[in-house]
Image (cartoon, rainbow, N blue to C red; front, side, top):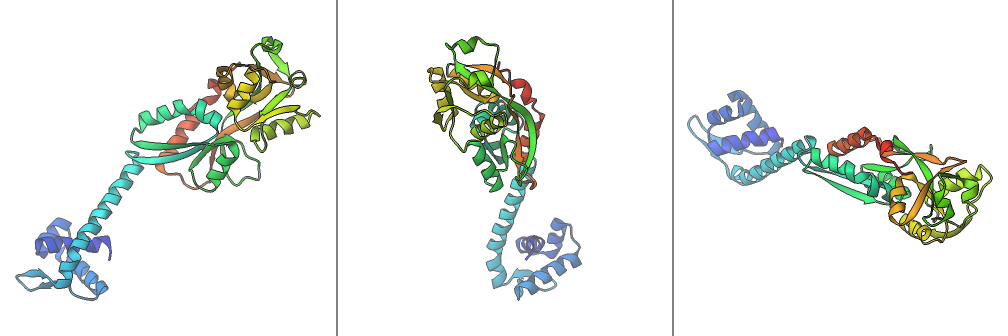
Length: 299
């Protein structure tokens, strides 16, 4: 059965007149008759008895009528829902983002998105960088925001801005009065960082290894907030993406420009390369349009 055939059946069954059904469907008499005949042949029997003056439903036609009504109602509802999704009158978009991005730059972006598309719901998964890649790769989410993956990654990456690592020191440390600091000076202090396999930890170790330097790690944590509290309490120093500098300051630490070497990496949107839903594409467009680099006034 096709939707066209079911609509034709309903038009005739409700009016019990081929002429009236033709007017409703804007079909010729012959086209309607052929449609009903094709439906009957497909099902294997007659749905109507008809002569020159009367049209009536057969027993099989009577049993089909409530089913046909439900089928068309479901079809029309599905059609209406999809139309609303395509026009962003309703829908849902799922996103995975690093906690530092989700808690700092994402809220104002979502505010812009909600102002434009108030009936589209957004689900945010704030997970570590490695999980962002995994969730996008497994298609658990449509969009991910994370550090640029390695060249071997199968995901598509659209850069948003370059994030640069900054030093984090206790606010009462002599280092806090410096305008900037180099790695050699910073690494003379006990170092606090994220545990492996954190991308932040790996990035720092790889960059420093090329300069013959090593992190003197004395404290480790899974959460950047814990790292910030440890630094603020005077247990040591750290280095975090500039995106996290505001959070570090709120925890009572001080952020300083870090140089020699400058450690930086692109942050952007990850997708699988498959066509995005209308809602996900709209959020993607807003992410790309925002000049996020200018928001990182952290020093």
